[in-house]
Image 1 (cartoon, rainbow, N blue to C red):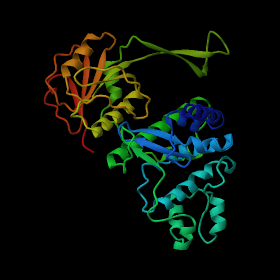
Image 2 (image 1 turned 90 degrees about the horizontal axis):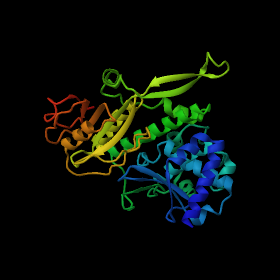
Image 3 (image 1 turned 60 degrees about the vertical axis):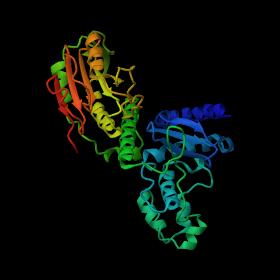
Image 4 (image 1 turned 180 degrees about the vertical axis):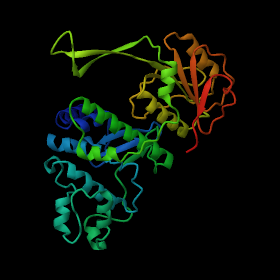
Length: 392
């Protein structure tokens, strides 16, 4: 049943990819699982991997038409895009907040694509004409209006002070957790923002545009700036790359073949990025590293490999600030530098670390050390070029 469920979710997701490209692409980044612990559908986050999941109750899912399943998937994607999961403890009455968030996001979904028992702003206007349920006023506004209801009216809506959100937070073993700390919330916020931005860019490349509500969200994103001018580093140390990227220009015509796009050949630089995953590196330090890597990846092609006492296999980077930690042992700068020295594929390397290791052996190629804000540079300060991420 679970496999049939996943296949069916993927089938509906393909429909979203055709008619609502942004949300279809967004859903492809989320793991789907069957769960009979949720009424119909819910979003979740794994605190160990900081990855999102979509939980679907198979006993309920197949009761609805394709149109409603389509709307349910978009509904859950909107919850994530609107950051509802990481701000679920911002309001004292969880059930009232559920109503407010559903009131907000269901305005972006055709009513025919949602279950009849859903929360709709038109219904709230009719039931409570004395309250302000104007269109697209946002979660906070609707929560404030709902708080004006009498206790009797709240009871009729099923709003009680001790009601809980139907959003799930679990650990690596799948056990439910109470909440997220500030660092985890910030990491998830950055992850969601980068996912939204990267998908919006992909939609634009397909000659499309992100939904208006998403474009509005992106305008409000405040990006941490990189602490190092990687563009200058690339120009100085990676400028002599002998790899090339062949592209076609849609706005310039080929001089030799009229009517055809011009072929553009650009040098392609690739930097080896080694990330210290040893036990001394905290999750917060990894988040700082990811912010720097996000900006670096915009300038140059990178290959990421984690290391502790040895250098691991390449980790695919999707430009959304996600990084699944796989190691937590000791630290060996010798292993990292030796790997770089011996591999002829790389001419430049950046090592992100807290600096808690032995003095490394000599490096015969271009190398930059990036030390975390809480790190110690004493073992590498006389080795190669280095910077330290300042404390915010």
